[in-house]
Image 1 (cartoon, rainbow, N blue to C red):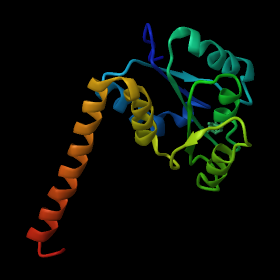
Image 2 (tube, helix red, strand yellow; image 1 turned 60 degrees about the vertical axis):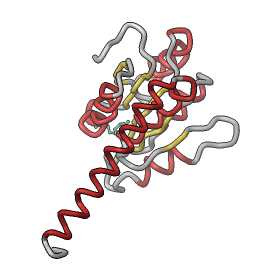
Image 3 (cartoon, rainbow, N blue to C red; image 1 turned 90 degrees about the vertical axis):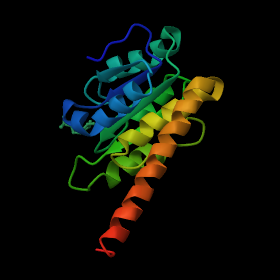
Image 4 (cartoon, rainbow, N blue to C red; image 1 turned 120 degrees about the vertical axis):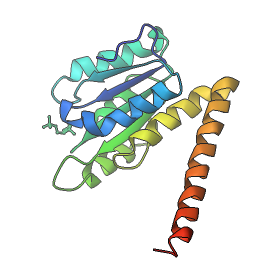
Length: 169
Ligand code: RP5
């Protein structure tokens, strides 16, 4: 699934049921020209596979990991426990609690093993944050990120004009 020879970013999700929400992360990385791989591995159901993905990542040339999970979302923390690469937690709204469970489980890491957590279902921001980490020493990527910000600003200006043209409706 989504295999690249030398992925700079790994996207790992806990279940196939997360895929639709996670897709914008892969799309954003692709738009920025960042090689990535998409995996399904669960902290609870396939803990050894999750651990292996994290342990092998640095040696494969990976620079950042996005970990998406819902419910009692331990995936990001488990991956972070097995690598010193930056791990970006993406809490998924998959239960009756609307993602608050995953948010708290992902963000409230005990001291010493951080997970940089984005908003519930914030797949696009997870990818942008991964890109920003890579752009620390990649000027071309930094320029692409600036262009992406300019597009976002242009969209807001367009919306502003549209609402003005409609007389505020
Ligand atoms: C988590 O449990 C997954 O990340 C998913 O969000 C949630 C529910 O998984 P399924 O029961 O749909 O496989 O591990």
